[in-house]
Image 1 (tube, rainbow, N blue to C red):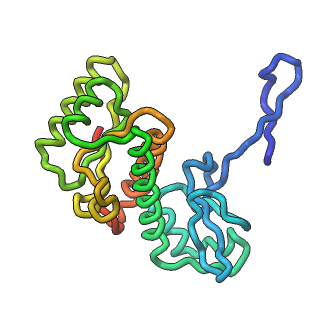
Image 2 (cartoon, rainbow, N blue to C red):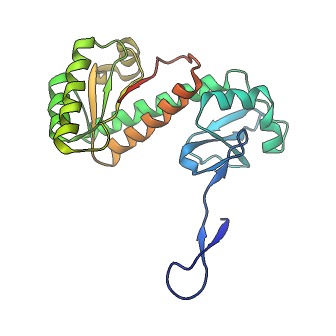
Length: 229
């Protein structure tokens, strides 16, 4: 792993070395932590594929989690140069990343539900928000405005009562029909994530998908993205 010298932090009179894990986006040339970027590799058949778990073998390259940047890398044929191979990126690579990010989020929601860290139902969500137990709320994109408004009121009440600097985040990625299709009996209209490793994993993935969709304004398949603060 690359090392970087930093001023003395442990008081021994010498400069210290720390491990640097940042990666460079092949589009913007900016460095950022791996968890804020998407890794891509060349498959055995020479196609560019996303590696969301950052585990696939071989040389990889990185792009900030923004749809427009993935599309730009495809259009400018940046992958072959970055991967140092004649790798070809399909025109719909940006849409594929969107679908994979969405599937990853749904999978974590199901895991969090089994762990008791993802609950649904307007009444339960409202209570969790008002008690401070909820760390994020989720709505179906076509949820009734009145139901969303009531939970928004609960979020505002919690923020005022707790003197928190930020609202409990609110996400809306999928329509009710899309949730029925991908989650089956676990589908919801209103839900929330609770504190814990699985619940925090849901919020992490939702934040990644939100950033990917909102910045891109791409209209990718898989539901409209919306977050309210």
